[in-house]
Image (spheres, rainbow, N blue to C red):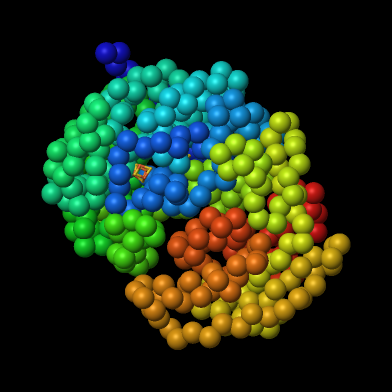
Length: 428
Ligand code: CLF
Ligand code: SF4
């Protein structure tokens, strides 16, 4: 096997400078783009509903469509033109990238046409030993492996099955195979000179107390950075009734684990078709109208540009968390008033007020879930939601239902114009 020097070369250092996930300083100025070319998966995580995206990198939620490799590379061309700060192109789902031959085909096409773009990939690690060198040859230098445990008892609670060599493994057998391949794959990538990130899904009462040991363990392997993500219970999964960890729980754990380990603290749990800066997803601007999904979605009107359909706004409804109509002063989960606005030409018109009554239900549990669900239902007709703050679950629920979310403080009109400024054709 070819072994590359593990010390960082200049090219890798340059790529790192503009990688928004591996380098926190870069995330406000450098953009990434995920290519949803990988619908199939070779394992079953108990928190994943395959109708939704892969939780490895992208919190469960629909991707607007699955692209062919050719469509994907055309989309990169269109996005590069509109988003010059695009530095990283990745495959991160909606299934496991390495369970889909289209992934390597796509990476090769992108690398050939855009050699200046940094390539990134996220996987469950099962096929990584087999593909590490091939990924390196395709130009990939950044690999994420989601590894939720290195204890097979714990792992067998997290994975329902692993498909390996034509067999469906379950229980400890599945856990052992996955773990062995993850370790081999991570070592191979590091030996080749790639930077490896390990993602860990924090699952309360399943792997939470194990995570500090796990972080120490992966640090010993030489991984570059660790990312602890909160479980998001998804309907239709074994873990649907489990509680999501509170933000403070995750923060506490990250603090405990960060001794001598680079800890990613700015992850946005993005979709498999995310595009743009981590804090400003622009995937809605580049939604296709053909392919697996078959049609455009939401209130958007598609037009074709460079072979890729982009969307134009029509009758946009903007919900703003504001009790006085002057300032954005409410969080998604605690505001009592959403004001609904629309645009008439360049004018912002207040259309109606949605009042929400709720008792403080804390940050998790049934009352909290009900509170969030009531708000999502109340805003089902809105296209854009403007709030002072929002938690990861409602943020992703809103995004996954095709809405744009804008976090702002201060003047309502200014916040609305900022929120709309990235819609194509709209210059409010
Ligand atoms: Fe994508 Fe992941 Fe590459 Fe980043 S995302 S494949 S390393 S380019 Fe980043 Fe998104 Fe968090 Fe992933 S914020 S979910 S860590
Ligand atoms: Fe779902 Fe990803 Fe797990 Fe596969 S690896 S089951 S797509 S979360």
